[in-house]
Amino acid sequence: MPQTNKKTIYSNTLPKERLPQWIRPSIGKVSDIERVQRLVKHQKLHTICEEGRCPNRSECYAAGTATFLIGGSICTRSCAFCQVEKGKAPQAIDPLEANHLATAVKELGLKYVVITSVARDDLHDQGASLFSSSIKAIRETNPNVAIEVLTPDFWGGYTNQEEAIKAQRQRLSTVLKMRPICFNHNLETVERLQKEVRRGATYSRSLGLLKASRELAPQIPTKSGLMLGLGETSEEVIKTMEDLRRIDCQYLTLGQYLRPSLAHIPVQHYWQPEDFRHFADIANSLGFKKVSSGPLVRSSYHAADI
View 1 (cartoon, rainbow, N blue to C red):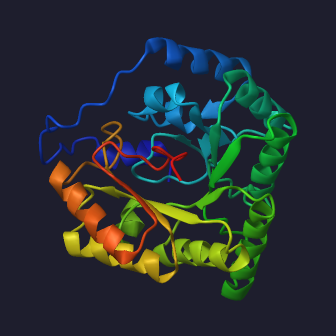
View 2 (cartoon, helix red, strand yellow; view 1 turned 180 degrees about the vertical axis):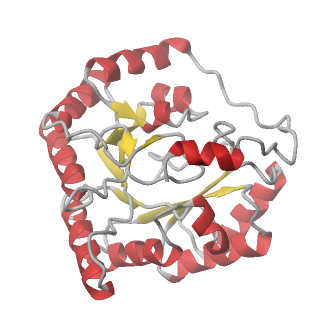
C-alpha cells in the first residue's frame, strides 16, 4: 500500500492523549550527530537512527554505536508505524555498499554496529546476502567490531507454505553463518494488532524466524522488541513476552511508540514509566537474560551492553 493511502486513513486522526512530560528525548551533542551525518552522506549510506529519527541517536553515537540501514532507503512494505520511505520499486542495490559501510565504521571508530535493512521483497533472497556481505566487509577492515543484525522476516517468493518456510530458513542461515553477536527480529506489537501495524508480516512468521535462529545457531542469542501504545492491553504484552520465552528468545526491548507524522498510525495510549518497570520485572521473572524497558527505549538501545 503506497504511503499516500496511509495519509488518507490517518491524517485526520488526532492522538487520544497529549504527549506526557516524561517523553523528553536527550538532545545530546550536536557535534556527535553532525559527524555521523557527514560521513554517512559522504559514503552514500543510510542509518535507521536518522531515517527513523531515533530519540537516542546522539547518545548512541557518543558511545560508539550506530545502526546502519542497508539495501537502500526505500522499503517494499508499508508498515503503519515506520518513517522509512515506502515504494514498490526500490533502488538498485549498490555493489559497493558493503565497502562503504566498512569504511564508515572504521572512520567513526565504532565498537558495536547494528545492521538492519529495509524489506526487499523484490530480491530472490529477500536481502539475506546483503547482511552477509556487509558483515564480511566490516570484519576485513575492523575485526574487533561487534556486529548485531536486525533483519526482516525473509519471507516471500513462494505460495506453498512448506517451500516458504524452507526458503526462510535458508536465507536465515546465510546470515547466521557470518556469526553475528546477536540476531534481532522485532515482533513490534501484540498478535491482535499485527495486521494493522505490520503490513506484510505476521506474528507466527516472526516467531518462526526467531525459533529457527535458535535451532540453527544456538550459540547466537536472539532478541526481539515491542512498541507499546498502539492499543494493546497489559495481558497481551505479557502473553507476547511468554510467547517469546517459549521459543527461547533471550533479549527483549520495550519502548513507547511515538507517531512520526499524521500519515502514520496514531498513538492510542502513553504507558507510564512505572508501567515499563513493571513489564521489565515480569520479563526478568520469565527468564529473559537482558531487558531494556522504558518510554524512549528502541530496538538497538544500549545494544552493546550484552
